Image (cartoon, rainbow over all chains, first blue to last red; front, side, top):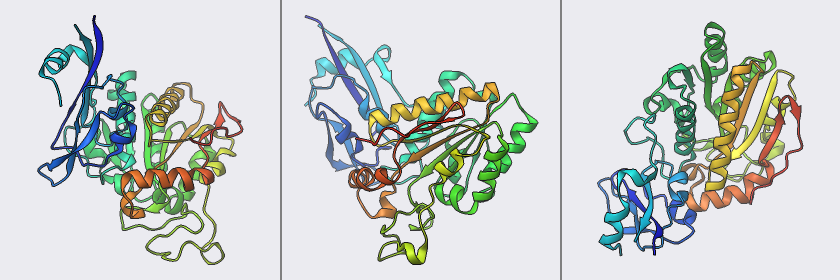
Length: 74
Length: 268
């Protein structure tokens, strides 16, 4: 059965680790990484496959670092 | 963790539903983590892109944190002296009435040093859009008390909280100018949750579209956070803003099509 799934791609070097996307995500898909990026910030990353591609994280992201994909998987 | 199967199936160009707009220059924004400026910049640029008017838009950047807005917005921009953005926008709009003109100002710029320019531009009924970011503080210079600082709110120049007996009352400039006859559309929005961001974008679109009809000023106040000035984390500052700023600055439309409306929504 085809299912609609979402995915996000975070521009790691632009993320400032403000965590606003985590509170906006309805499916708890995003968490902060343990590693840091080039500027020393912990960055947002996808930690499970619950993403539905609702775009909430990308819309509230102050730096616009998140690209959202949505598509069918078989 | 991510299944490579899902990743390879979905992460394709044709499946993109949201990406950063190309009208924002591809460089890191100079704002603090979690600052509302970035969201408002992006919503403004997305609106211009959707309306297809990026070649016909002139923006006026203020003095304050967003003084470098011309570095990030890929449209024609001009920098105004502190608080004088409405005066400059008046001149631009009168010289090029067919262009879309907006000013982008903070509360220290619009409600303190630029009060006279703001009020008189609104009262003359000039035909441009004002976007006003209100975080209750002078963010750029280190969190000093601004005219919009709440009673009892701590800032670096009111370390025991704003005392209204000695420091005066906060200025609700949005309600003040809503009463002026030259003003057509006044609204107050926020950008801390996806719902509020979508509403802000709609308000920006409405404000820019009414410039075609020469109806007068459209004024959008965005209540925003200043997590470094308030000495909080971004998520804490958003919560503090909901609990303290929104009761004093209730969200919602204040004037639509030249008629005052009861401000309805107090944010969830």
